[in-house]
Amino acid sequence: MTDSSGLPVPAWMPAVAAIFSVQLGAALSMPLISAVGPAGAAWLRLTAGALIFLAIARPPLRSVRRRDVPALVALGFATGAMTCLFLASIERIPLGTSVAIEFLGPLTVAALRSGTRRALIWPALALFGVLLLTEPWHGAINLAGIGFAAGSAIGWAVYILLTQHIGDRFSGLTGLSLTIPVAAATAAVVGIPQAAGHLTAPIVVAAIGLALLMPVLPFALEMIALRHMNHAAFGTLMALEPAIGVILGLVVLHQHPSAVQTLGIMLVVVAGAAAQRNGRRLPDAAYLTPE
Image (cartoon, rainbow, N blue to C red; front, side):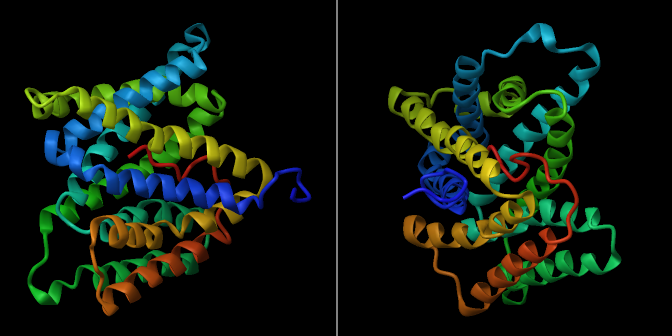
């Protein structure tokens, strides 16, 4: 059955499938993280992703102008740092909690772009939700895990801003084929020492599979979704990411949130969806995180 836009499935389905792919890739990365460390896992995944994008897109390097280089390098660095920080966080705290904290980055960007002070209530609501998630009153808070997730949130915010700039110059896969290799090189600084002596054929194969789950498959799905739905609707769907992170954390990693933590996730999702309603110009695949 085809919808009115000619897509054989509803436009929201590829968008939600992209979220599942991202979060499933994160959950399934845990064995790789245990084997080669979070930075090592980030380096292997980003390297595999870079090779795939280079093979598919074959970027025209002659089209890169000198003034494009700083933004390309900055976006690649932000992507690599964000990926390393996110994987370091899920090594220490539950996946859903990490995703919720990381989501504060794009949520704040969306709120600030709304141009109204009232929109700032949504990051504040999400922050309260994160407080419920981390439950600091229990005294068992993992500051390192939360710190890594917060760093990833900053990286995601920078990623969105730079992606819009790069998207004005390079379309679709071309931008990723230019920036993901830089991200892989960034992760390599810490990742190679972490992974050294632990690389085996099964680990490399696993890294390639995880690279397909994130970023290759989600990017393709999001491109399809964005052709058939507006950016506000797309951004609202992306607000489901923390909730899906909790679900996959429960199913794959057997991480059981408490009732208070479930309420916290709900607040983050509501805040994320509300922040998109009046946001200005969302770049294509701005919410895609190559974790």
